[in-house]
Structures are given as C-alpha cells and as structure tokens.
Image (tube, rainbow, N blue to C red):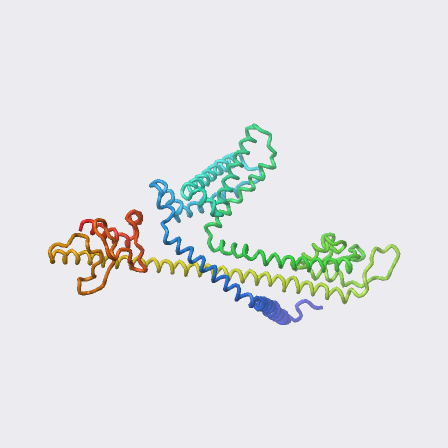
Length: 460
C-alpha cells in the first residue's frame, strides 16, 4: 500500500461515521426511549390519578398554611431580627462566598509545604469553622429545634459543623500530646472537610433539582442494575467456558487480553465484561478470541474450543448491543422521565402558589368592601337616628352602602355597646379577625381598613 495514494477516500469513512455513529445510533436510542414510554403508557393513568390526589392534598395543606399566622408572629424583637437575617438572600450569598474561599484554601495544601502556609491554613480553618458554627447557632435560634431538624440541609450543615469541631479538637490533642491519637483518624477528619462543598448544593436550585431527580429514579435504576447483574452473570459464566483456556505468551501474543483482562475465572471474566461494556478496547479482546486453535504439540500450554471464529463475534456483538446500547439507554430514559416529572411538579407548585395568592387577594378585597359598606352603613344609621328623634347609638349594625336608597347591605361586627340583628352573617369569602389578630397583621393593608372600622364604631 502507498501512503496517501488516494486522499479522497476519506469521504467514504467520514460519511460512514456521520451516518452510522451520529444518525443510526441516535435513532436506535430514540427507538429504545420511545418503546420504554409506550410500555409505561398503561401506568400513566394511574400515575396521573395519584398525582392529582397528591396535588389536591398539597393544595389544601398550602391553603391551610396560608390562612394561619406565620410561626414567627410570636417572636420577640431580637429573635425576629435573627429570623430575618437567617431567611435573607444576602446571608446565603455571604455563606456561598465563604465556602468558595474555604475550597480555595483547602486546595492550597500540598506536600512539604512551608510552616508559614500551614499556620495560615490552620487559622483560616478556625475562621471558617467559627463562621459555620455561628450560622448553625443563629438558625437554631431562628427556627427552633423541631423546625431546624425538619430540613435535611440544616441537618447536613450541623453534621459538617460537628465534624469540623471534632477535627480541630483532635488536632489540638495531637499537638499537645494530651492523649495518644491514631494519625489516621486525623487524616480522615481532614478529608471530611471536603463535605463543606456540599453546602453549595443548597444554594444551587437547578443542581438540587437534578439531584432530586436522580434520588427519585434510584428505585427503577436499582431494578435495571439487577438486570445488568443478571446479564453480566450469564455472559461471564459463558465466557469462562468459551475463552477460559486462552493464553497470552510470546508464541501467541494478545492485543487486548492480559492479566488484567482475561476469562480464566468468573471474577476476572466479570471485570473484563465491565471493561467491554465501557468500550475500552473490546475489539482487541474479540480479536484475541478469534485465533484458530493450533495443532496439538507437546509442551504447548494452549487449548481452545473449535468454532470460536463463529461464536466469538456473536458473543461480543450481542453483549455490546445489549449492555451498551439497550440497557444504558433505558437508564437514560428513566432519568429523562423523572426529570420531566420533577419539572411538572415545580410548575404545579408555582401554579398552586399563584392560585393561593389570588384567593388571598380576593379575600382581602372582599374584606375591604365589607369594611367600606359597614362604615357607610354606620354613618347612615347615625344620621337616620338623629333625624327621627334620637335612636340609641350603636343600634344599627348593618347599614346600606351609599345611603338608604341603594339597598345594599354590608355586615359589620358589633364593636361593643350595641347589638346586631345580623351579627355573624358575613360575606362568604370574607374572614373576620379579632382585634388581637388585626394588631398582629397590621402590616397588611386589608386589615388596616378593618382596624379603622373598629375604631370608627368605638368613637361612634
């Protein structure tokens, strides 16, 4: 053969790679994913019903939670300020910046480092640990023990704080030679500092969504893992029977098989098949199994089965197609499905929050209209009482909006000293609060009007 005799033949190989590697194999993946979704279509109805029931329960829970007073409404001034600090977005940004600096300082440690750098890193570790301890303490005060430990990210923060404090304590004990401590424990505690990087996941919502998707898909991926194990078991046992007697020496060199990739026993066959499933020189291993059996000669350590040239391609091609193209793509399909479900849940959460805010806004508007009508009714009642010769003050509990001629009744709770014939009949979408609740929620405008109404009745 002459080198570069016909360079244009590269078009043949490039077109083959484009068509087969990019189009045909991706179409194969698409067919596998589509058939996976078709097989799950009969379960979609049941899943949709369960998802709707779950949505209704979450909606009712959110609605009840929105109608209740917030848990921090009874906090004092100091604890309320701590709560505002712990729930602030700026605190998360500051902690994220500190964690990034901590990661940089941990990466500066190296072998035979100078004493000045070791001392600086030691004090940096003290600073970062103190910061995380203060953060965990403030959150414990702000949320309380039950609410703090209810969040798994807070549990992770507390575990990181305890490990950091324990590592510093053991290092100080080792330096002072107070107690005999195994140095391996010190190294393990230093390695566990890497867990501080996990605190960044709490701020990265997109990464958390992907992590939640992987966690939700673990049961189905576990089932596929068992299917993988069954496939590997069958092919490993078959490989020991077919290729267990193949040897690699100077007379019969090997391209892919070696002492790390062989079918001599079941364990090594299992590891070799794992290498084949990753695409690592599996064609070289197949070439080694395609050798013809040499004639029996004395002193030759070689034995093989006749017909390996026909069995070996079927063995390796079927295994690669099944493991590398079918099962792995089914795992991809499972992850895609759960990612789609997580996106749907996030969209439903946003819709539920918007619906609850709309309901609260409509309820606040209704309460404001009721308060305006009550003020107008009380004013009209007072004027009418003065015109007919002095009716008792506070006797009219419900007046008309815009005067007696409009005929629109507006309910008003009795403010004390008077009685109401219509007391308790409020607007179906309007919720009346006690004066103590009104004072606690005075920051909302819809309750300010109601408190003004109570003041007006009291003065009247």
